[in-house]
Length: 390
Image 1 (cartoon, helix red, strand yellow):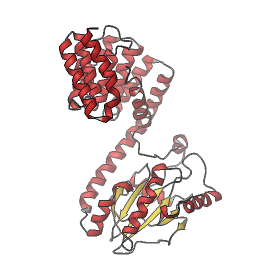
Image 2 (cartoon, helix red, strand yellow; image 1 turned 45 degrees about the horizontal axis):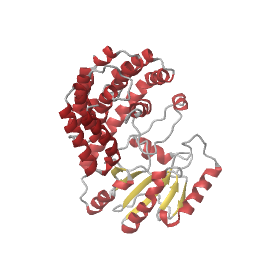
Image 3 (cartoon, one colour; image 1 turned 60 degrees about the vertical axis):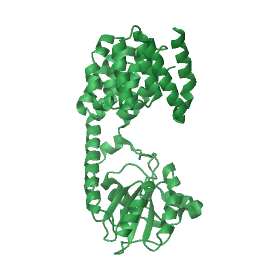
Image 4 (cartoon, one colour; image 1 turned 120 degrees about the horizontal axis):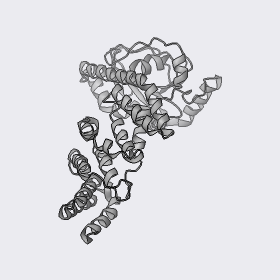
């Protein structure tokens, strides 16, 4: 029952190599970006005056050239290749109909070159044809940013946003009142229209969010060479080099690259067969808040050691039990997979009664939570082996 065999590798590949991501992140050619001269982009947060509406052309609806005082606007960004964007079209149309005369929605097409293609004379035509095919699903004004990318720079890049769809609510004073995913703006829009929206509070939150995002980008830039070394060492199975690179990566930003510790542990156990070094990491792993507060990561560590189908010989059961117990604690004993691991630890310790008690509890959770229902038969089979004394 190798439930989590690929969990860690997958999570680390995303967390370490890709960094933080939003749905439908914009794909960039980092090499070309590094070679290009840096363009000065003015910062944009909630509470700032909204940037000008400067697009290459309007594709659908009446052109909007400025913000009329007393009127609210929603400037939303999308692309033809973005599934979540397309899914949001009907919702935006419903909101436009609901707030007709009070709110003007402008859907701005951006990032049509995000997959390596270049803007050409045909790009605008293709976008226009795409919009026409949407019909009533896009019942609001639609614009095309184009190769100049003025809207992308003034709104998205200025606000530090790297994922679409993204919406900006502009209040009756022409200030950005909110920035976020269009699926989450209904109540905010109602409050803005009713004059109940606390823009000062939202501005403070926006500033803190942007500072955090800026810090994250700086950390990723600083870590980029080390991340590349991690990737190369992993792909070439140079385990000693990988352990060293992971340690250096963690040192760059202990919070952001906390999971590097888990991979180091796994490399010691599974690849280098240096169990002494792996077990020596116990206090370091438990002191790592990003790991100790993540039930699935704790379970991954524990299950790697006690998996009956695994390769670890003579595992340190007390070590595994500590992480299984921590995993159960942070998930409030509601995850049957982790409870199953804890039961396995007690079984290996020779406490048959405790193992059966925990296994039965895990099975009951599977019966009451359909998210775990598929695990029930496996857990029942394990319970039988415990009762049979095997």
